[in-house]
Image (cartoon, rainbow, N blue to C red; front, side, top):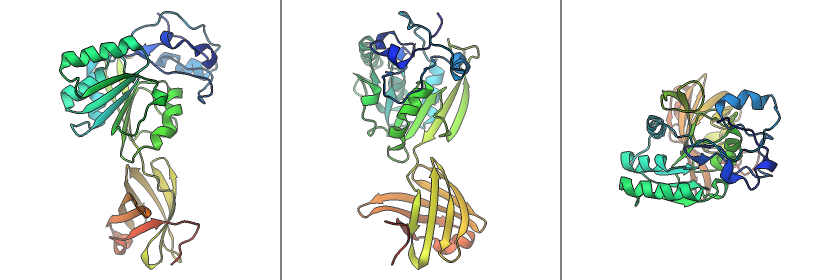
Length: 312
């Protein structure tokens, strides 16, 4: 059965008839979400969406498409899921990601899904798998879900939905891991992408899946002040950082990359690794490793400036 385009207006009241992957509705596409005019429902429609083709009518029947089990496992492996993690699956379909996280990796988790029948099926599947005490499922709109308890979030959503979720995802605790099946998040490039064989995949011509991992970066943009006149002026674009550092009279250009709350900086004179922390007196950056010309800064703690200059 062919897939479809749908406008936000056409999608009002049509959640039950939305194309699904893993048996999940791909999104609750409401007006005012800031989503693109057309939402593509399969990879092979992506180019057509980009060309602005006219929408097709919403269809009453849609395919039930499952993610192969090996792709599910690969998503969890990419995130490094362990028994310490709480996995949140947005649009959980038949529950397989949360159940696999609990049964195979020892994690606990929550799946949110707007189709009642799929929520009930997920609960039965969790009972059958013997992990109902660690795998919870709720009938819930993913846009109204509290994301803050998760250490890992998994998604198989459309690009426009990923972009609508992106501000909330970036606001999560630094180090939270996000894994998306096939779809990216625009200019927020993944920290890692892997391609896995998916012989059981029933959508698209190529039987492969692209899995994307992001680690939520700490917010480090701005002016940071340390002892002996040390200053760091940082400009941040997601996990990428540029700026200047050094004594005010001898600032050196630098660039860097964040991995969660750890910031790796390098400049012509050496490298530094810092750890970001939010304390009672505000955010700090502590230099935990430095080499070359930066070696004297080892152990320094820099605090976020309240204004546009360092004082005291």
